[in-house]
Length: 417
Image (cartoon, rainbow, N blue to C red; front, side):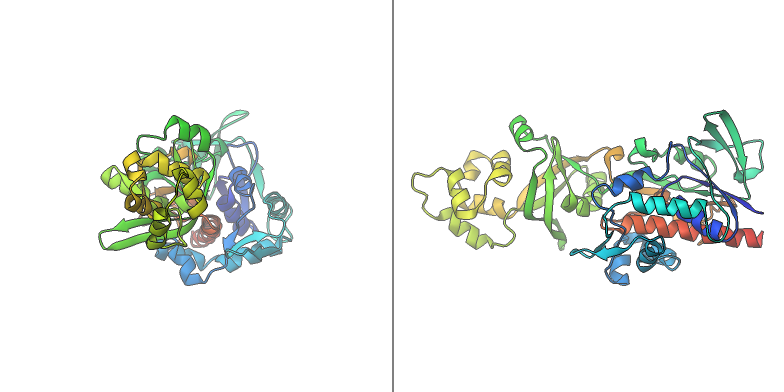
C-alpha cells in the first residue's frame, strides 16, 4: 500500500488526507501542535464562515491576480462542494444576510469533530493516522530524496519516509497556532520560488500615531455606518461602506481588511498610504455643509454636530483628532472633512497579527496538480501558496479546495509512478 505523508493538520492538510484516505492510500498527518485545526477553531470563534453563496464568476474575482489558478482548483472543490462536504459530515449550513455561508450552529468544533471521526473511522478507504508534536525540520540528507523528512518529536529526532508528501504548513500569521513560515528558507534552498510572505486582511498604524487622549478613550470602539474611498489617478479604485475599529495605534476591522491589499501595496511601493473616510455616506456634501452652516447660537461645535448631523462619540473625536482648530471652524473645510477625511497610514501591523498571508510558493514553481517542479513527489496546499483573498469565506474555501486538489494530484502521481 502506498504511503503519503501530510505535514500540517489545518483545513488544507486534512482535506488532502481525506481525498487520499478515501482512495485507499495509507496517510499519516504530522503537525507541530498538540492538537489539530487550531487556527480553524480560532477562525470559527465568532461564527465559522465556511464559504460564500455569490455566483461563481464573482466568487472567483475575489482572488485577484491569481483568479485563473484558483478557478482551476475550484474545479476539484468549489463553494457548493464545500457546503455538500459539510452536509455529508452531518453539519447543515445556511446563507446569512450578507451571502456568507455558516454552519447552522455557527461553531467550528462540531464540524472538526465529525471530520476527524470520519478520517479515523472511515466507511470506505483507510484510516488516517495522526502524529502530533512532530515539527518538520527539513529534508533527510541521507534519505530517499524529497520524500524523506526529518522531524523533532517528543521522543527525539525522527525520519519519516513516504511515497509522496503534501506540505500544508500555512502562511506566516498567528505563529502560536502553528503558521510560523519556518518552511520558507527550506523550500528556497531546494530551488523553489517563494514570494515574500506579507500580511493580508490586516490592520494598519496611522501616521504619527493617535494622540494619547484618542488612543486611551477610543481604542476598541467602532466606526459604524461609514464608507472609505481609495482614489486613483483615473478616479476611484476602491469604495465601500461598512465599519471598522480604532486601535491603540491605528485601524483594523472588516472595512479596512477589504482594502488592506491595496493599502499594503501602496506602502510597499511608495512608503505611504491613505484612504478617505466618509462619516455620513447617506448624506451629500451640500446637505452636510448646510447643516454645518445652520446658526448654532450659544451651542458648542460638539453639540451642534451632535444635534444637526448626529455626529458624536468616535466620529466627532476623529474630527477633533485630525483637524486643526481653524479647519474645525471653517464650515467648508469641516463639511469636506466629514465627507472625506484623509486617514494617513505609515505601516501594516506585524505579519503575525494578520488574519491571513499573501505570498508563498508561486504557482509557476508547481505543476497544475500543485507538485513542486524542483521536488518531484512533494505537493503544496493551502495558505502557503501565493494567493490572497478577502474575508467572507474565500480564505477557507481556497484552503479546502487546494487541499483536495493536491490530494487528487498525489493520486495521479502515484498512479503514474
